Length: 154
Image (cartoon, rainbow, N blue to C red; front, top):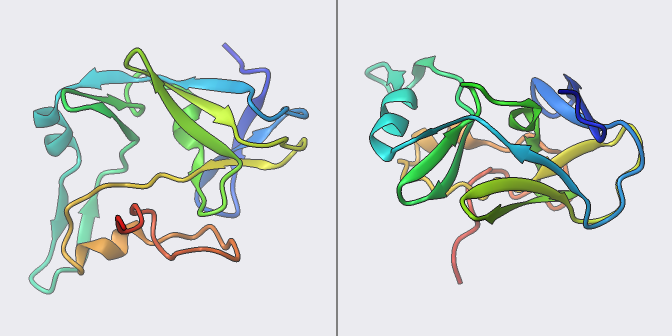
């Protein structure tokens, strides 16, 4: 089913992105993040990255995982929808909201037609400093923190 608010197409941030089809008022629920619901053991299996002896990534699965809670992650790569293509930004116009173990993307502010939809991934990943480079941010925002990882807790 086609979403009335967004369309997926080539992004200047990274790969495929989602763009507003029309004006989206602040507070609008844009889309639900859909996909296969999987337990932590399967997340690890699907997120494996192969590295060489120097720590360089030689093979990486492209994953569209969205953490819901300690027992469930949504894999948007399996039976997912276009929500999986919403890119990260350090200056997002959307936010993710978890309600009743479902994930929704909501507009933080008014979004103009053709504007790319983004939210701050705030990834909480235990990664070595070498592995962290795979989480580099490409958003280009003036306030870009250089990573899709969550900012340090104060």
